[in-house]
Image (cartoon, rainbow, N blue to C red; front, side, top):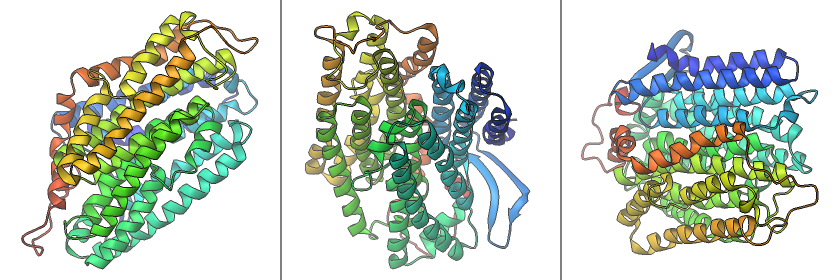
Length: 510
C-alpha cells in the first residue's frame, strides 16, 4: 500500500489540478483544493510511517520506460526525501486555507488553486524521483505554475519579476540537463543510482569538474546563492502570497536537495577532486550569509526582508552540505526543514498583517501587538525559530551545521558563517520592534483585528511543528542518519577505485 501511495502523492494533485481548472470560480474550488491537498498530506504520512519504520519504498512502471535512452518512470523514498515531501504536503493546504477569498472569486481565480495543486505535484515528484531525467522533468515543471501565479496574480512589477524568474531558473536548468545527459551517456542510464556509479567509477577528474560545475549552476540558482540570487527579492515581493510561501519554504529546497542527491554523490566523490570549485562555493556561501544578512537589515518591505534572510540562511545550509560529513549533512537537512517551517509561517503572518493594514512597509505600521495579541504571540514564536532559539526547530539545524563547518573548514570560516546568526537576530528583532511595539500607527482605513479561526487553523500546525521539531529532534535526525552517512562516505577518498558498483539502495534509500 505504501509503495502505491508514492504515485498517489503525484497523481492525486494532478487530477485535482484538472478538476479545479474545470470548475467555476468561487468557494467550491477553494474547498476542493483544500480537500485534495489535505488527502495528499494524509498519503504522505502513510508513506512516511513506512519509510521511518525502516522500509525502502519504490514504485515503477515499465509501460513508460524508454530503454533506448535509459529512462524509466521510477519513484523512491528514503529518510531524506520523505521529510521534504511532508514539508510540501503540510504547507500546501495551510497556504490554501490562508489565501484571500477574493482570489478564488476572480474570473480566472479557479486557475490559481489549480496551479497550487500542480506545483504540489511537481515538488513531490522532484523529491521522489529515482531517475535523473524524471527528476529534471519535475524540477522544470515547478517553473510553469509558479511563473503563471507571479505573472497573473502578482504585484505591479509582476511581469518583470516573472521574466527574471523564468530566465534565471530556465538558464540554470539548461546546465543541469547537459550535465545529466553527459553522465547518463557514460552510465547508459538516467537512473540516479547508475548516474552516481558513473560519477564514482567512469568519469575523469576533468569530466567531474565540468559536470559538477553544471550541476552547481542549476541548483545554486534555485536555492539561490550569491551572485545567482538577483531574481529572488523581486519574485518574492511581487508574487501573490501563496506563491511566495511555496517558493521560499519548499521550492528553494529543490536546490539544496539536488546538491545532496546528485551533485555531491556524482561530482564530488573523491576529496582530491574539484578543490578549486569547492573553495569557490565556500566563498560564495560566506558572501551570501553576510551580504544577505546586511541587506535584510535595511529592508522596509517585510517580504523583501524575508527574501534576503533566506539568502543568508540557505548560504549556511549549502556551506554545511559541502562540508560533506554525516554531522554537517544531518544539520543541513534539519536546517532545510526548520527554514521551511519558520519561513512559511512568517510569510503567512506578514500577509495577514498586510491584508489588515494595506502595507508591508515596517515604517508605516507600529504598535500592532496591543491590537493583535494572538497573532503577535505566534509571530514572536516563528521569529524565535528563524533565529535559532533553543527548543525551536531552527536551533538544532544551525548548531549541527556550524559544528560540521567547524570540523571541515576550521575556526575562521565558522566565525564568518556564525555572523549570519547574529545578523539574523538583529534584523528579525528589528522587524518585531518596528511592527509590534511603540505607539499605534497604521494607514487610514486599516482594520486592526486579531486573527480569525481560519487563520489560526493555518498557523497552529506550523507552531506545533516548530516546537515538536525543536524539543524532540533526535528521532528526526536518526531517521536520515544512515542516508546522509552513505553520501558522506562516498565523498571520502577510495582505496580501490576499481571496486565494483554498489547496489541501488546504497544511493537511494536504506
